[in-house]
Length: 224
Image (cartoon, rainbow, N blue to C red; front, side, top):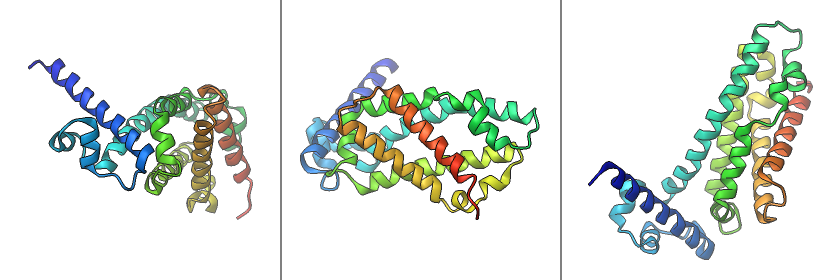
């Protein structure tokens, strides 16, 4: 069998399993599902399921991590351009420049639009997982990813421009603000999907991105 044929079969099996997962979550909820039920609905063997995923959690993680990796790769050029520009031009208020003046930081990153495109593409999955029949595990998983990513990027950015006191402020260092922003973003995603996406991916990405920037700008002024 050719390599292309194997790849095609793998993709087909994964597609069937993802579709079965979505349908079963909508019917019964995530927590009640078993691997056997997912495999049966997808009309594949349990052995086929386990060739691709460890369990139902790993199946969901795989879908989410594919998107997360793409978003992070998409954000890298923006982060690097801001760091390079500010690093070469010393400033008394580099944090203010990042949030208020840097053209790169003011424009909505394409990676954010890509993220909402992903949620739209897998709308049924995310509506099911984040809705009433979904899983608190998955909500926590997304919020943790968003909070950890924001914290890591903030530390890197602050270190690169020698502005560490912002990154170590209590609201950043103890995770309060990153988790708050993560929770707000999840609520925005849920609302957007449940309302049948009244805004385009670019519009909702722009609104969420600028809300995040506003929160960071405000928190940077707080006294400890």
